[in-house]
Figure 1 (spheres, rainbow, N blue to C red):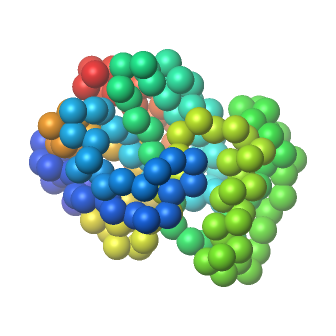
Figure 2 (figure 1 turned 90 degrees about the vertical axis):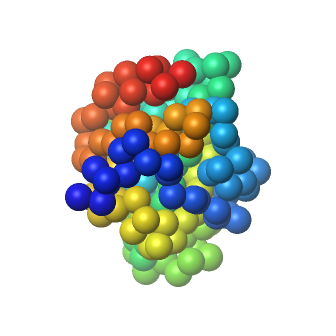
Amino acid sequence: ELRLKLLGQAAPELDSKTWLGGEPKKLSEFAGSVVVLNFWASYSTPCLNSLPALDDLCIAHLHEGLNVLAVTRAYEHGYVPEDMNDLRSGARTGQLLQGLDEAAFTKHLWDFRERTKLRFPFVLGTLDDFSAYGATSLPTTFVVDKQGKVTFMASGGMREHLVRIAAQRAL
């Protein structure tokens, strides 16, 4: 219900100081650009399945000012794929990790980025960030327009084509 109430409204601020693969900045600093926010977890198969399509979207529209941010939070478990092919094929030949503290989780995210070569940054958020967006099922993806308003929301896997269309419209 909260996710639906966000449509047409100003996107809640996201102000993480921990970015992997990018310089930390507030969501509000992206004014004038379109942002795709993907709330995800590395242990979630639907989340893993969505990442290659987000990477393709990022590459296709980077020159138009599209920003993709993969927002996660510290979890006690995670998955490290072998490489990008592991994500694209769904083979899941990587390693499942258990018992992670926050430092180990952050290292795990670096390993994930290194192996997959995803081009968009990972933003380490908090439970409060997830709650502000109502991101209770994963992945949950939002498109934020150039004015900072939420114009699209998709929850669950297999929504990549809808995210792509919504991002293209916002551009």
